[in-house]
Length: 228
Image 1 (cartoon, rainbow, N blue to C red):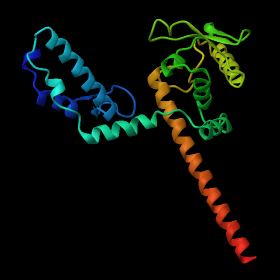
Image 2 (image 1 turned 120 degrees about the vertical axis):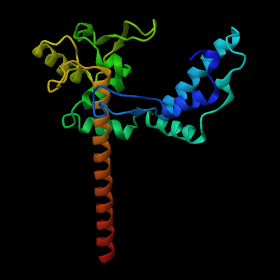
Image 3 (image 1 turned 90 degrees about the vertical axis):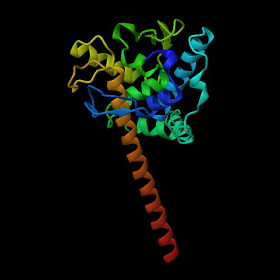
Image 4 (image 1 turned 135 degrees about the vertical axis):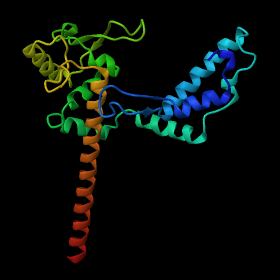
């Protein structure tokens, strides 16, 4: 379809009915429709495409800016963005408490204390880890972000050292590995995302258990004091 033939309903249909079919993971072979945040990014892309086309007289009207995403989508966007907020002090404390119990909790902590983007963290090479100077080198996405030097926080140095030794032992060039991985030990962004989500799920379970125990103790204490 040519740009000048696209109308509002085409764009809206793309937002609502567009999907991808993953070739790996839990949704392999299934249709995955756009999330609210993805729809927002698609709408922004449509706007820019039509801005460019209108400025060059390819189209005589900017149909992308002739409509807005639904209110429900905007509400869901805000909810999804809240999910991506930084870890609270309570959550970080839970990560430390369970760093030996939850697989890849150490990797999440390394990300928190270093500031690496998830993909940057996933592909850190042991050649770029300087344990004597306590720095790491890496980065991607922008020129300013590439090959940047990041200090190793004292709290996560033992975690880095352990991962470094493990990588050396299995002969991996990468700092973070999954020795039980079905598609190789090396990490990718998709692999990290899956493991990150599992860590968060475990934290939520632990948090709920702790709250239930606290309420149970509080209730029991209250009843004991009342009976006394």
